[in-house]
Length: 285
Image (tube, rainbow, N blue to C red):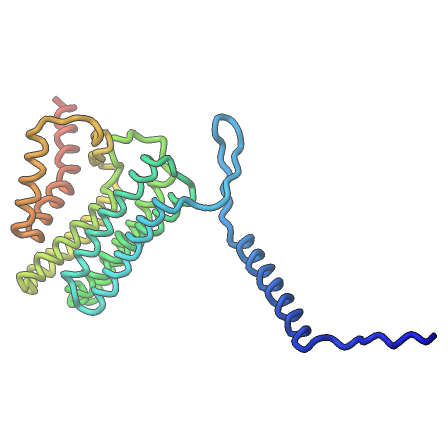
């Protein structure tokens, strides 16, 4: 009895299904490999034990990314000549920068990655952006001196951020050593916003802006102390008059935002040298 030859022909489309499965499997392997290669891994010591953590915390880094976007938008707006929008974007970046750290502390999601990411975001939003906006608005009319002073500000902002990073945990949290870069950027943004709003482009305003940028740069790298407001308890009860004062403050600022913000941050920037002089005079007496 002869055995019929076995049919070795495959059904139509079988090869394509096999190839498709192989391709899907290969893509999954590539995706998994890519995720492994791009994963952020942090090692820290908690309660005397080394902890290895994968991934990043999303919520605080969303605020940092938003601040980074605002800083980049300020650069683009400054290049396009929309200086009011550029100034507003720097202020928005300042608010977001203040929120990311508080959110991280409130949700216990602090990380070394978040700290480094925040510092790089600050370099763009409070270092490059205000210098570029000031330069494209009025400092470029002064010539070489204008861009040299703009670069001085960028360099001092980088030095200020680097010094702040290495001094974390070793200084009194109630005080900043040197003018904080967000406050320096806010002063420059408020000057640009106010002077541009009033079409102040005379030589005197150009020299004044040159002085403001240079002074803000130097104050960032000095050892002059500035109050940090970090010891203010936002979660505790306060007298009713405090809330009333906050409401009045918002109303006053809304009347003429650019002028009021300029006065506010100019007072804060001046407070450091004034208090330092008062302390030295008191020590001599």
